[in-house]
Length: 286
Image (cartoon, rainbow, N blue to C red; front, side, top):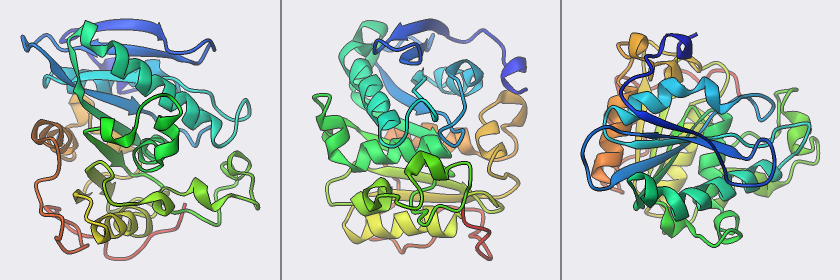
C-alpha cells in the first residue's frame, strides 16, 4: 500500500538489470538527482520469510534513500521452494558483486558500499557481512563492505519455531552455521541495528540485543536503536513518506551511511544506544 502512494519523482530508476541468468536474478537501481560526483550506495534486501517478496514493492525504501543522496539498489533473489539455505545468500552475494563492479557507471561509489535488509532481508545482509565465505565466492570480502544495516533481523533463531521458515533451513537439522551470530569475528564491517520495541515476530532482545553484544565483545563498531510507535512491519513502513513521522528510521540510516559507521564507541555498554527506550520484556521468539 505504501509503495502505491509513493511519488515517482525524486530519482532516476534503472529497472531490470541482470546480475545472473535466472528470472529472479535482477535488480533495480535508483539514482539520486543531487549533483554529487559519487554517491554512497545501499543494497537493500527485502523480507518475506525467504518465501515471498519482489523488488518492485519496495520503491518507497529506495526513494527515501535516493532523495537523501544515496544510490539505492533493490535486488530480487530466489526463494523457497525453488531454493533453500544457503542458495538465496549466494544470489545476494552475486548481486552485491555486480553492484561493486558496475555501480560507478551509474554515479555510485563502490568504496562506500553498504548492505541493508529488513526481517529475513536483514538476516541476508548480516550473513554477507559476517560470513566471509559468501562474498569470497564472488571475488569480494567483508572488507569491501563499508557497513551494514539490520532492521528487525533474526540473527539467532535456533531452534526454528516459525513453521513457514522451518523447511527453508532443513528443520530439525538446521545447521548451526546458518546463524549470523555464529559468524561474528573481529574485523567485521560496522553495523547499525534497529528494532521495534513491540516486535512480536522477531524477538529484539535475543536477536538485535544479542548480536550487538557479540559484536561489541570482539570490538566491531555497532550502533543500536529500539524504536517506539512501530512494530515489525511499520518499522520498514516508516521509510514511506506518509509514515516517516512514526519513527526516525530514515534519519538513522542516512546518518550511519553519511558517517561511514556508528556514532558510538565500540566499548559502549551492550544496552540500546540513542534509543527512545529499551524493550521492557522479551516478546515471542521468531
